[in-house]
Image (cartoon, rainbow, N blue to C red; front, side, top):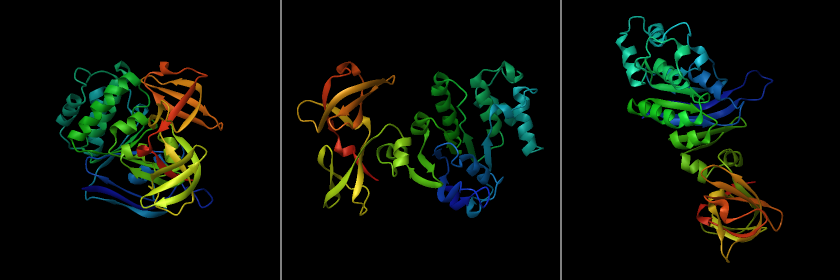
Length: 339
């Protein structure tokens, strides 16, 4: 069930400025996590202000289900540091509902694991506890939709790994719909039901997380979504739902995901879909660099025509800088992008 629908929304700050966004449309379902990605300055905060009614769009509309409550989760700087944990949550509740039952404050303290902290001042809380307080304060007014603007940006990675999944599970249990802004791709891929990518005033892609990674719809989205190999070349043959692309490495048949008359395209594939080969590799080159990445490594290979490609290895001890390697492309997971 849709709780909110944005239709052909356009906004700019004044007539002389470039549009923040131009005719963007999307919807939000009950209990859904919709993540908004994009470069800084593309209008994500502006969009939040329109959804909450603080700004009016130049054109377009926001349709909301009847009685929809939208709450924006602000940063810790907007908490009252002179009040206790209980008082921070209570004051927010009473500002919205002067006659509200303050037992709801106790409920939020318990749900968000702040027991025994209720009478503490905020300077006595850890970063994770402050984050829990922010969410408890927002949830006490029983919102239908929460707008989250990089809520985990000020806590360390170790804490974030457990806290964000725990908090999002609470939202899911209560069927809260979320619009979630983050620059952290791990958060976006692991927490989202759908991902929107906003850039150049346009909503460039609106997809499930796996599709955003494996089949992005634009060059910008592909690059933003993680490391990507792009090899340009013309389409030289069309065979039903497949095309033959010619580039510096040869001719390759791939699925025609573009379904357009584009004659010149990028053959695109993520590093995980470029693999070491024995003798029958699609291309060869020399290892230029190894980029350590924790759980896995990226290996940069300078090919014979000076094109640099990257592939992914769980154990990079299999190769060393300067050695020659043969590589094969997993064409089942390769796709086309317009040039």
